[in-house]
Image (cartoon, rainbow, N blue to C red):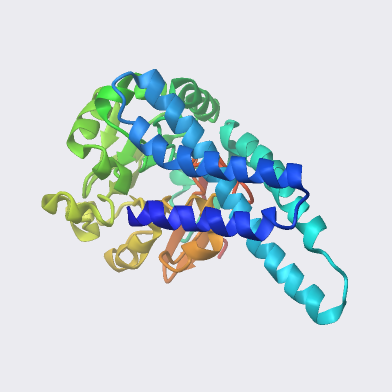
Length: 369
């Protein structure tokens, strides 16, 4: 109820600041639109529980589109306040009406661009990671990483199948799925994740849980994904023999997993226990970048993460840094390389602005001496 109350107040604020500055027909349209948005957003969360999945998904689509447009209206309304303040300080120009008219136009244009960015199949992003002392046999070893697909009410099987086809074209040595694959129950989404069984690589597909797996029934999901050929790594590792050299592929449960399943506390040391000391490369799959400090302590060479979505759309990327050490891209933490994916899908509103989705092709190369 508090969230609905806050949502209502923010809609009132937008209407108060914009409608009064617009001509009557535009003001009426603005008020009707805000009333519709204020209704659709909470209704989507209720409608998602409908027994008919098609009805539930339609409610989700309507509510998430409304939420995205509302978020953009709020951002542009706040930006307008800054412009009006600056105009008041430096000139006597009356910018009230033109700026009020610009806000919904800009929000709709941004919504359209963000929708295209979210719904397109993620593009491949190539990343080279230099490793000191990398065995010659592992030079050029590639991992295709996908993350944060969020299969759910608006991300369905066709979307997943397009990602799988793009990954298979890379002919990677291994595939890594770094969490938040799903956003809903197995009973509702098992057919939508089925295309993952077609993922192909030399050494197979490896999966670690994200926080959304724990919201959605982690035991049921890990059991199902195992039947699709994904090797689930929960604080454990496998050793890949690649042309005579060994690579340790380890994975940990999500950073917050212990809050849902006490036995799943994320444990980098346990994930590496028993690994060969002479392995040529040690890779950790960990959903959240903030696992990096413990991964560096444990002796990993590389950590592949997701979680952040790169902020998904501006300006929310500015706030990710308050919780996570890295928002996106390749970074160095002591002797550890950390790559944080912007995600391959999206969560919530179908929007991607300033943070494009990606399928990451990570290629390990010998570091120059």
